[in-house]
Image 1 (cartoon, rainbow, N blue to C red):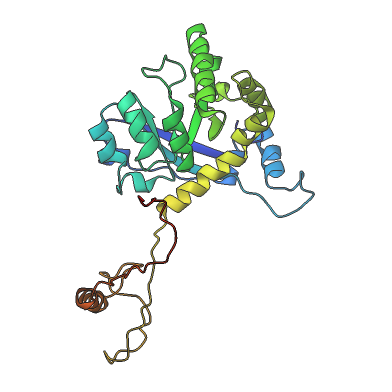
Image 2 (image 1 turned 180 degrees about the vertical axis):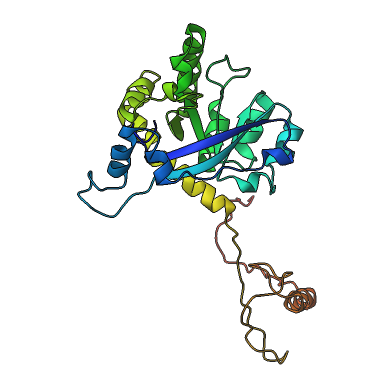
Amino acid sequence: MAVRLGYDCVATSHIAADRLIDKDRCTQRPLEAATLAAAGPGVTEALRCQQGLIRDGGAAPRQLLQVSRLTVAVEEAAAAAQLLGGPNPITASYDLLAVQPLSERVFQQACTTLVVDVITFDMARRLPFRLWPGPLQAAVKRGVHLEICYSAALRDETSRRNFFSNASALVRAARGHGIIVSSGARTAFELRGPYDVMNLVTLCGLTEQQAKAAMSERCRQVARHAEIRKAHKGAVTVIKESAEGGGEESSGRSAPSQEKGLAPAAALKSVREQAQQAQPMKIDRQQTGKKTGKRRRR
């Protein structure tokens, strides 16, 4: 259904709560194009359009991007720090990481310290805490995006009312920045086309440009943020030793104890000895003959 509606990327989410066990490890595998085409007669044409055979006039094929996602709903701050505070073999098996805070403390923690790509909320229920602008802006600066799931607006009356209330509060607090829109659909009947979704979220306070970015540009930023998060980064410092020590310019990787911007221990020792031997400078104030502003008594 997502392919027929014109989506280029589909994320399949696995929801876990409080703790992760070995059964929560990702076992999802991307579906082949032949399997998707066998789902219905309209899917084949949609796949051809997605791959560029019709829409781009025979240009380079564009494959449907299928990613896995783990959403952790957590209420205790200690559990959140244990699950999403650092490397974890279970979370590493997923492409995207999302957290659903169930308390204000976890909400503050998710915006500032948790290693996630998306912060999501249960739009069908009333939020148990208030959305403050400060933490949300801190999350956006870190590259973490805020998610609005529109499927709650397609259910019963209570869910629809809570959706508009929660989504409007999120848009006001975040000022429309860093927001992405996804379905959160349980069934295929809760999916809608991109333009229908953009029209829906404009009722929550997003502008047309922000609604379009929430469905396209910012979703790509989430995928890029996930790739950077999973990448290993490091720095190498090359230090040229003095001729007295008989050393030459080092090459390759530096020792683990030498960090970027720090001199070797020998250099630090020599600088410390020179500072101890140096005498403090004495400044002699000379009389300049300028008026001091004091008058003599006659």
